[in-house]
Image (cartoon, rainbow, N blue to C red; front, top):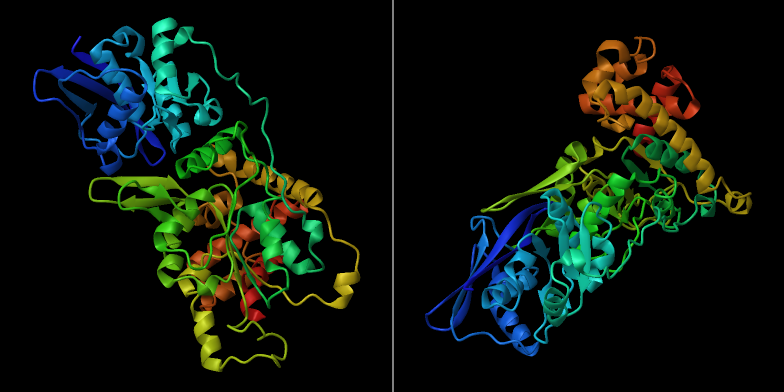
Length: 514
């Protein structure tokens, strides 16, 4: 036989497309070529495949072998096509029967010694294969645990190319292969997170964190070093509701693209927590890359918390790049050949000192910053970003009285109130949106200002006056209304009252007022 074919998966973001891998033998000068728009890593596959086949005591004929990755117009990125190319070549040679591999997806990088090495993005690849109607997928043994999370497809793990060829020769199609791993997931798993009871004092800041968690609102914490801003941010994921299984699978697919899930065999239902360093580049924050486009921190924090400590120290282009995902919940990365779309619906938590030296609070006796330096530091968090932050609160230094007082509420107690508030919001907005809006932060402004959800004039009087005198933008008006609805949900009221609106205004202006 001079033609062999099997399948692989091409990824664009989290979306996968079935790729037919064809190998053809011809009577020309010996060589192994790959066509079909491969990138640099994929173009080097012939050298790896040739060495792996020879190291596996298999022989390549002295003929020209052309491998085509179809559809040829779709970019092929990475080394995950190696195993499929090798199987297609061995099928063309006759070492593997075509009927056994024609409807099988092969994923994996080949080492020069014939080992099948793990690759990033196996979870979305297997998901795409299942969606395309493929019944069997061959993956590296190291990736088998995460690949087994996908329902509706049989997944087989292999360690070497010899294992693959031997299985095809001895057992035939993968439906007859022994399962290398019984599905390990018996239920969702939650990773341990720090407890909110560890925070000394800070009743106002704790209340602001609770409101932000209950409504899915963005949060700004300002205060001197050591006041507990980072502790509060780290404990926010502990009071957020666990992820649904579909959400957990989506989050894990993003982590799979980053290459951080090789050994995981359970779905982690705890929302992610991502805290990049303030020196992070634009590509590290929103995603990118010159060849293979990878997700950034905003996508890694999808369905969880993105914490920017020392937020004014981040580069201006990095901070401004957050504006699109904060509004849309997605980040779109455009390249010459393709546009890649990643989910990025996260809760942003910013932390900032009062001034560059950190001592510009109270009477500021120890502060060494000039007035110009303090203004420039505060201006680094520009208006467009601050206008998208719903809850802004000042975190004062911890006093001796607060340090010796009884511990505050544990995360489990606060999480129960957050869960009830979110359930109330989902019950209210779900029917009105067909299930698209689950938290108050997702509700469009016009829905809150027009129709049956419009609040009476006396309730929004303070808000209307703030808009009239220019203290609020229209975006700020809508975001304050959302916080007011969240406050009502936390207190068990079905509709906000004037006190809820007033508190929402106070929370929005709390950091600047301090």
